[in-house]
Amino acid sequence: MSMSREGRLPPDGLDAVEAEAWRFIEAGGRSFRAPFHSGVLGSIGPDGPNLRTVILRGADGAGRRIWCHTDIRSPKIAELSADPRVAWTFYDEPSRLQLRAWGRAVIHFGDDLARHRWQATVLNSRRIYHAVAPPSSISPVATGGLPPELDDARWTPELSERGEANFAALETVISRLEALYLHHAGHRRASFRYDASGARTAADWLIP
Ligand SMILES: Cc1cc2nc3c(=O)[nH]c(=O)nc-3n(C[C@H](O)[C@H](O)[C@H](O)COP(=O)(O)O)c2cc1C
Image (tube, rainbow, N blue to C red; front, side):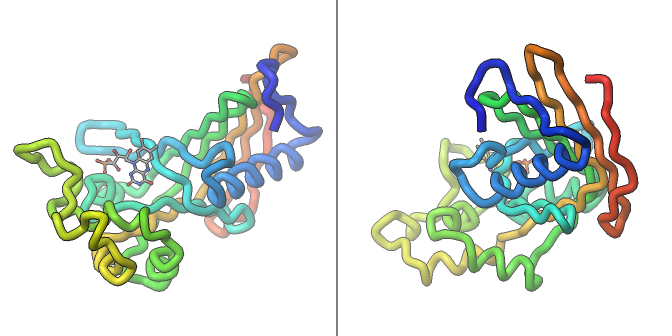
């Protein structure tokens, strides 16, 4: 990806822009070195919009789905159970490309998909799922929330398996995707819509 401050020009045509956007999202879901490896996930909370940074853990462009991982006890799960509508935003500063997506969340917990994703989760990423108290609960002291038996000396793959009890894979089924290319020669913005089966129902240039 270009590192120029000029920004990145979109490829020719809406089909190519859409393909590039999904390619970047899929790459971000595969590698921590890729742009778009983290994004901001928005849900609707009891007090209004709620945003948080999450790691993109996978994407399937053909299936119009993206995934992140979280603790089943976290407030975002309750929010998404009450209202599954979500928005995502990703920004890569070196290329000055913003990707936005909207869709519906599907919570995978204790099912085949969650099991498969847990098995693919590396040892170090499993640690946070061992927090004794639920994420967001108030603590009398500053703490990472992990029990003492999880200190480095005793942290083993066998012990890590207990974290699966709190592990959820959060799927978003994308219904709309937008790409905004900032460029000194003129910005470009494209929008794509999908129906429930993932078929594209619209592809449009927008005024940036
Ligand atoms: C770089 C970064 C990556 C993060 N990745 C995740 C993640 O993949 N999953 C997650 O649940 N929280 C992640 N967090 C923490 C969330 O931003 C948030 O603080 C936490 O999930 C609590 O959100 P909630 O109270 O809305 O449930 C990440 C935070 C940062 C700064």
